[in-house]
Image 1: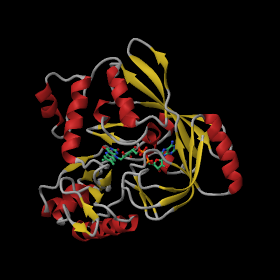
Image 2: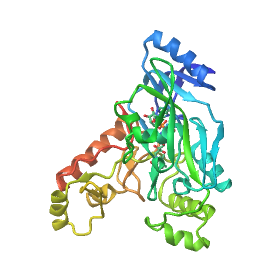
Image 3: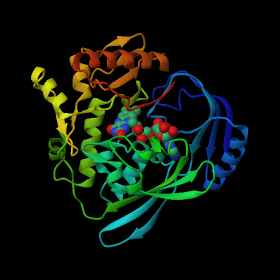
Length: 337
Ligand SMILES: Cc1cc2nc3c(=O)[nH]c(=O)nc-3n(C[C@H](O)[C@H](O)[C@H](O)COP(=O)(O)OP(=O)(O)OC[C@H]3O[C@@H](n4cnc5c(N)ncnc54)[C@H](O)[C@@H]3O)c2cc1C
């Protein structure tokens, strides 16, 4: 267990804004987590679990306790002819886990290669990329209840997974800490390549295989997304909005080339990147806060931008998109005001 006071967070989140936390606490086991929570609950300070800090914007110092899991073990819970069920520690680096699953020949996570962060956040945000979401492979999530300190297993069907959404961000927010995620992966290879340029990139490497799909995803990601260690960012800052069909038709009349994806519920998801780009923001810079030159969804910290600077830019962009398209953009990043 590690307990530190007044810690600089610049290296502990991917925007690298200059902020501090009152306490930074790391734990290595569920028992240690229970012990910390028991004492912290008596203190009455705010508590927030943090993984790699790759989906967070700190607009001010955190006045409370940031809890970081160092539970990094994984184990095979079940195996049959077709699949394996793995229990994976919340503190394991996400991409190390994906690489390991591919090395073992288990299919399911290859499209999610290269996403920064740790396993514990994967069900919270229901991370997704290239047509696949974490929920496609999550069977259940083992959590600790912050009040009762009891461990519970939440089945995937009860987690209300949606587009970058789950109950861990809604009615279960501030109630549970994810300790382990149980992933069911297939022994049979089947690939989802119908997203963007993925198929062509895989073809350049040969036949579709777990390793080739991973390599293709990493190549595309590296060509589009800035490395947060070189240019602070948290990936896509904006969610793609879902609008009703009538609204979509009215936008389509004026902008026939807007990329859109019809949803099962009759709504239409439209491209936030395209709208932001059409409003002229790509590559824009205001002080050290900016919009990425290669991907309009990504806001960046060129050096000394504060969380407030980034938030201010986000609001200006969202307002201009709303004015032009009558669509209110929402952040994908967790903003701590
Ligand atoms: C360059 C870049 C590219 C990205 N690309 C993608 C992408 O393709 N797809 C995608 O979905 N995301 C993407 N992201 C966003 C980010 O990588 C994911 O959201 C990731 O899951 C964040 O993991 P983390 O461990 O850093 O979580 P953090 O940012 O530390 O936390 C995120 C949220 O989860 C909560 N949380 C963290 N750990 C726990 C826990 N153990 N228990 C309960 N709650 C917890 C936190 O309180 C917070 O609310 C990208 C980010 C960057 C920087």
